[in-house]
Length: 95
Length: 318
Image (tube, rainbow over all chains, first blue to last red; front, side, top):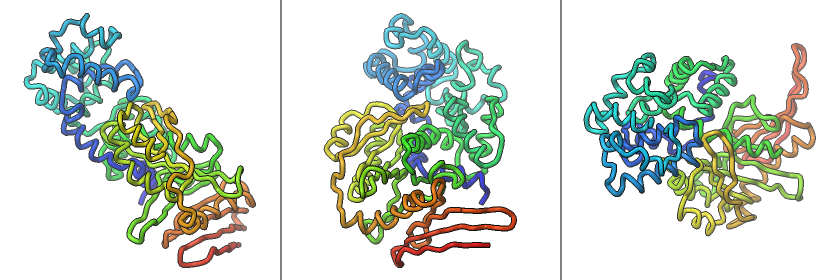
C-alpha cells in the first residue's frame, strides 16, 4: 500500500457515514432535493460566510420564509422574485 | 443577486433537478470561465464546483479548509502542496481515485476530522487517533485505541486524549466523530457508540459539523455526553462539556483501558516525547522509543500489552 493511500485512509477512517452523505449529494438530494435551496446555499457559500454557522441557518430561514409557503416553488420563481423581499432574509446584496 | 442570476440561467434549461444535473454534466472545470454560470459576477470556482457537486459531478471544490487538509495529506505523503485552484482540483480528484475514494468524499471529509485531534493536542494532551504515524509531537502512531465491551464487539473511539498530570489515575477524553447530512443527524448517528464509551472513559464527546442540533441537545444532556462542533474553517467549539464518569464502570476500566493506556504515559515519563505506539495483532497496544539511530547503531526500547499476555518489555540493539 502506498504512503499516500495510508495517509488518506487515516483521514477517511474518521468520518463514518460520509459515503451515504455523498450519495445524496451526487443524487442532487441535498436540502431534500430542493434545487432552489441548493442554489441559495451555493450563493451564500460564494461570499465566504461560515458554512455551518451562517449559511445553513440562512438557507433554512429562506426555506421557511419563501419555499415552504409556496412563494418560491422553483428556479423560475426565484429568478423572478422581488429582490427587496429576498434581501430581508439575506441582508447581503451580493448573494 | 448571485442566486437569482444562477436560477435564471438554470431555469432556461428545464425542470429544476433536470436543469441542475444537465448543466453540471455538460459543463467542465476547464471551461468554467466560459460557462454562463461561471460568467456571473461573484461566482468563483468554489461556487461553480460546489454547484457541480450538487448537480451530480464527483469532484471537489477548492475552498480554504479543503485545500488545507488535502495539502496536509500531500505533504505527509512526501509531495508538494498545490496552491493554484485549477491544479488543486485536478490533483485532489487524482488522489481520491488513486486511493479508492470518490473525490466528493475527500472533500466532505476535510471539514470534520483534523480539527478535533489538533484541539486536544493544543491542550498538551497525548492523543491516540488514526493518522499518519510520523505525525504528532507527543505520540506518534496510526492506530486508534481499541476496546471490547463484548466478545463480538470491538470499539474504537475516533480520538482518545488522556492526561496523567493531576491525579494518580489517568483522565481520559474519548470522542466519537460523525458526519451525516446535518449536524442533528450526525449527533444521532454518534449516540450509540458514544454512550458505550461512557462505560470506559471519564469524559465522552460527540464531534459533528457545526450547526444547531435542536432537540438532540437535550438527549446529549440526559446522557451526559459532550458536544464538539467543528466549523468549515476547522474551528473547534466545545458546545457542551460532558459529565464526569457518567455510566463509568471501574472494573471495565481496569480490565479494558488501564493496562493498555498505562504504557504511553509511562514511556513519556521515562523517555520523553515523542513515543511511537500502535495496536498489536491481538488488539493490545505497543509503545516504542528510539534512543539512538545512526548508520552503525540502532537502539530502541519497547513494551506491549495483550489480553492474552502480561505486559512485556524489551530492548533492541543493532
